[in-house]
Image 1 (cartoon, one colour):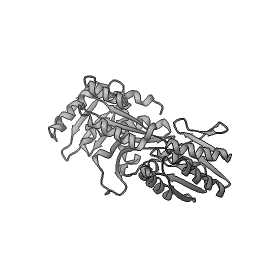
Image 2 (cartoon, rainbow, N blue to C red):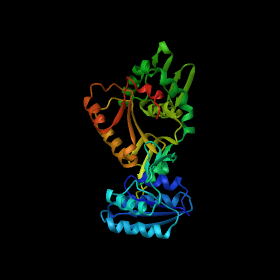
Image 3 (cartoon, rainbow, N blue to C red):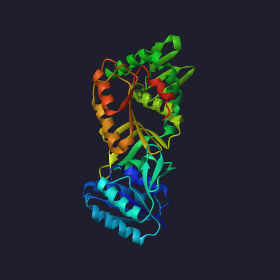
Image 4 (cartoon, one colour):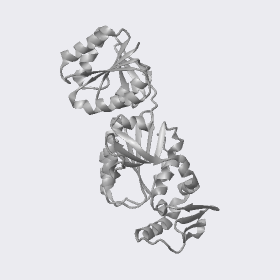
Length: 351
């Protein structure tokens, strides 16, 4: 029976991934009062992943070197086949556990999740450690749950239009700006918006909704807001879908475990994906924005659910070159911007 000892920390994925991939039968969790929330989230996930293993818990003082070493020695004496994941915890916790396992000549590893490998210590070696996990499990490990998102089947009727716009949006942006003005002024019925050079037309329908004609095709949109911004998140989805994601979703609504199952506007993500244990968040804005709130929300969620290796992107089809504060803030937060000059290049990015 293989026993895995974990030092619980806020970087929950460093604890969770080895548990799910090493086929262990027993998990020993060393946690502190400071990390009770991370411990609670991790326990919740482990009880719902459908794997048959025993979970034991040990509350420790984060800086009690001798106490932590004693617990590890006890675990080693009771478990012949035992291994230490030294990735989490405080430095004192990691060093104390390392000292006990090294003296007993038991295997020790550090998970390099960024490069998908396990680094074994004393003696040193490296091994590939592929990670495959879905968004539900990843987010649950950080206290979130998904309560709604668009299914791919629901986006298929508008897929031809979204794909068409990946090629022609730059030359049709004037049509979209005119349409956005109508929406802003709450004009439900308007004269057709036409680009004759590309045989593109947006026409309001008497019974409500909008008809879009393009490239000898026609799409009826029951939701007029689709052309006011929803098209961009779907277009981003189709552009990046080829990257062999472990999970990729659009229009994701989140809430906290224990909260009412109602979407919080602060926890809505336009496009969210996970690959090799890394979280990718995309905020898609079709209009010009001067509001930093979108960027702060994106970074807050990336930090909470993505940890050190989460990536965030701000996608906009509008020109924001004059909004220097947005560029500066994104650069400070490590958020990459794809604005009107390069957002179509997103389809060539490898994640």
